[in-house]
Figure 1 (spheres, helix red, strand yellow):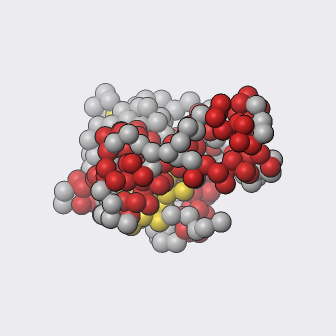
Figure 2 (cartoon, helix red, strand yellow; figure 1 turned 90 degrees about the vertical axis):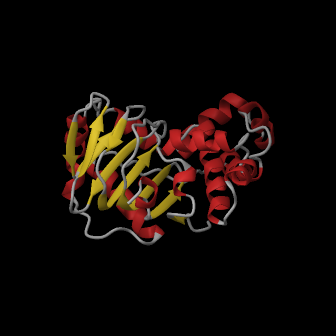
Figure 3 (cartoon, rainbow, N blue to C red; figure 1 turned 45 degrees about the vertical axis):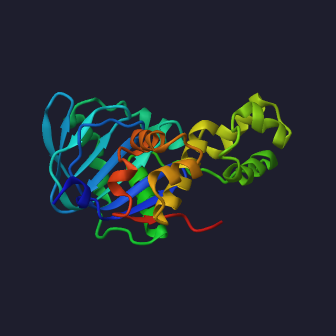
Length: 258
């Protein structure tokens, strides 16, 4: 089985986080700017750190920007990516996870407590699994929905502004706030700073176009990226997967419309 064809599961692509459920394939050495929570059903996954140490893991938590490699494939598992800059990510930072594979396995041990009888198939199943995994690590932040009118207005506007200027200085006048006030309110109510939230919106837009059969270049332009290389770099840095490796292979599952 090739590295690419191994990833034939479901990709639940939602606000601030991504959850993959299905066969786990080998990867190249890589690092990405998210926490990676890994849970394997049945056979363990062998992980390798930058020091070339390996360990079989039924569960693990890999910190952001740390090189790691999936050495052996497993028939079924879950990988949850958490943005380190949102509320939950900031809580995970307090775990002070080391850069070696034994530290990843030790930190991930609580994930085994709730068990994983089956892989999620529906959005609600994936959402429940995500919350269960985060609770196991004591990092579940019950984020209330935004209440401030300016933040709610901006959330409605942003999907239509991805090809325009989305800097705070340009967006603040649209909702009647100063840039500083909007920055504070957005991070407080959404749980994520504006810049990574906009990146997520762009990645989601690209995912939607890829799901409909668009080329990488078409998806990149539709989502406000400069070109396909820019999209691939952003996707790999955020989630550790290149869109070219999984487009047309995994089943994309997007959140139900609000």
